Length: 175
Length: 204
Image 1 (cartoon, rainbow over the protein chains, first blue to last red):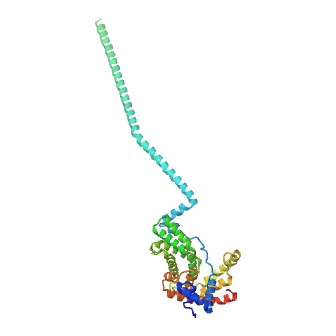
Image 2: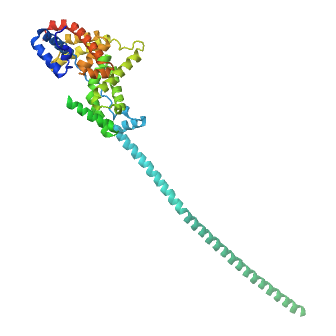
Image 3: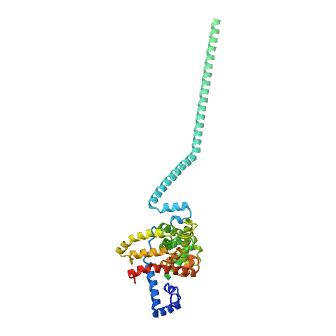
């Protein structure tokens, strides 16, 4: 096909070493047939170049995207975290969580305070009850004592009346 | 090209060194550099945009997972394309287990070249890069479809992706001699197919 020292196609495709290439260059200067052959290759290459590369129709997922993430959970998290709209939702969610946590903390604090207060209160109540019982007992004793003294006084009086009656009857009988 | 490959190697070392934000950044950069060529390679293999896109995604996922197995960072491109080649062929096997060959893309190609035609006039009007006449684009598409899948892949890797024979051998897992014979047979077919169009149009 060719009288070139090396394959012209290899030459054209730049697959020859530098010395081989030089030899072909020299040969081409003197050989019209080989020059035509190289020209035909050039035309074919130009024709092939008429098919242009296309742009990638969609953005490929990068390493930072979901498909490269190790777990679905992390995937979801990344997507969730990276989306601006959902960031607002996230802050709302965080706010509500904060509210819940705070309120539960408060409830706990109240319960704690109640728990701390209860023994004291119970002690006070116990003391008040004790005092009330003691006062009531004292009053009852006083009343009993008073009643006893009344009873004594009444008895005294009765006895004295009887004595007076006896004495009068005695004196009356004798008269 | 040389400084670019050095940079890639640096990125690969960084991406493969350890997991972390730096590694992720480095790999993201590699993806942004290579997604278009890999996508176009797979597009010419599969002749289907959806398949090409899905495969491209899988390729970068696999590459990320196996980056530490890449011994020589300077061999990143062939290594990446080997993953792409294997992914494409495993898809072909899944689709057509008896044939073990890529489907004949003629039909899909026809549809695609139709779309390309629609795009071409606007490209001409916009003057974005060298514009090619519709008939040449069509002829090239048709000529590529005449090739066997193996021949077409060799043409794509050499002419559209600019790989060396030695790198193509790595990607396809076969000797350089096989690749050369596939490519040169393909070139003969392409030249025969395209010569009439070119002489007709007077391309020179």
